[in-house]
Image 1 (cartoon, rainbow, N blue to C red):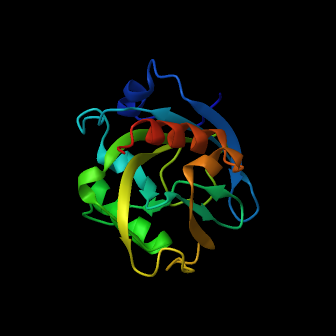
Image 2: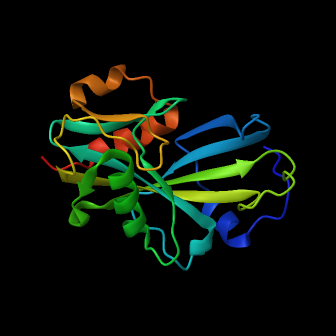
Length: 199
């Protein structure tokens, strides 16, 4: 993989010797002109803050178990099991996860159940676009798993993402999850989450 630009030494230390559970490429941007490689890395224990500066973590995602199964989201591009988004100033990773899950799905996390599953490493494969205001060429998205027991609306009610990105979310029974068209990265995090869930 050819990555342009200066790379953070702390990030390189984090990635050294890790084998991603899944790797795929996407093109982002309005005109799909930004090629990226996304690597899904499983880490069953928290990564120390001393290993990776928090400012490299642009977003936080959270796989959510809820009564009856796992929360599955749908947007204009795909179905997925990783609601989440960009961190706001001063937020901890846990606070970002909780806020984003409520915004995108209506579910409220039980903070005592939040545990790390790993991270997504996003690497730009092309030149930095003119005026691009985000981290380049690398950024990270922390991925957690958690349980939710309450929702802003009824568990089976329609929910509108407060920022309009996710078009829908629903709880899917664990037995039905294998039939969903999830990306390999989503599948890897889902399997790790289900392997560690409590009865």
